[in-house]
Amino acid sequence: MKELEKRILDAVEKGSKTQRQLRKELNISKSYLSETLAKMEEKGLIIKEKVSERTVLISINREKIIKIGILKATEYASIFLTINDLKDFKIKLISFNNALEEMKSLVAGEIDIACSPIITGFIFHLMDDRIVVLSACARGGSGIVYEKKEGIIGSTMLSTMDIQSRIFMKEFKGIKYFLSPEEMIESFKRKEIQAISIWEPYLSFFNDKKKIYPGKEDPCCGFLLFKDRINKLIKIFYRKFLENTKNLRDGKRIEEAAEFMSEFFKIDKNIIIQSMKSYDFSNDLDENNILKIMEKFGINVNMRLVNNYLNKV
Image 1 (cartoon, helix red, strand yellow):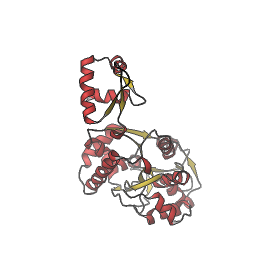
Image 2 (cartoon, helix red, strand yellow):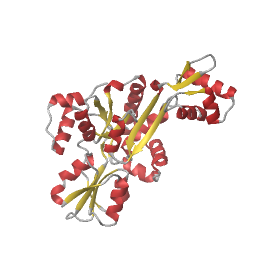
Image 3 (spheres, one colour):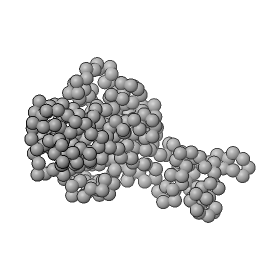
Image 4 (tube, one colour):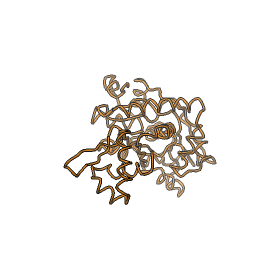
């Protein structure tokens, strides 16, 4: 997608605008704008609506744009590859500090897809059963870094890290919750807490520290969205996402994914590559996986609820 096309889509993202408004806002000529809009209409990126003899409103074609939420995790490598592969669509990637913040954005309609912990998605599903998980993103990629086991664990609330902290709680004194991984790490460095339950790539920052690896038994995050908002573009994105997860699992496109994530997260590429080794890139997710995750969190659920949550496309 050309730079001007991106600027036009950004300009009309929150509401329709006339061509005159766009010319003024983008500071471009009438002929250049008309030519670009014609090409965008042909691609299906925009919709033109004639409201009077001399006024045409320009709107985004919502079937050609996706907003995706992620946490600051290298688990989403296949998301980055898929965005790069689907260049003809406008795909906006938004990073969140924690899963609760991300899921609230999904509920508010600010994002179309949330790549977020399966446990967090299920809690929101209990409030609105239209929220479903299509598949896992990966397994593994997290652990507990500690100075000593007698202290407090830093974690993020209602997340896979929360489950992890609870499982190993008997080896520590308690849990302190943080709103972002950066806050948690800073508290750990100041020795205010003695351990952190953290995910990659942050886990790879602490190669000189003691670690507990829970393993790759359960998936962490899932591909979450409202089932009544699944459109043609989301289906195209999802199929490519599954394909790219398999590529990563087969050891393909690792360097490429690391380049994209290094630029986006502003983290050294070598750390990104190292962190990706902690993951089993698998989309497999079934009812028993979800039941086990809920049991570990202390939530008793029936199979009907689980089946409602796990949606097959």
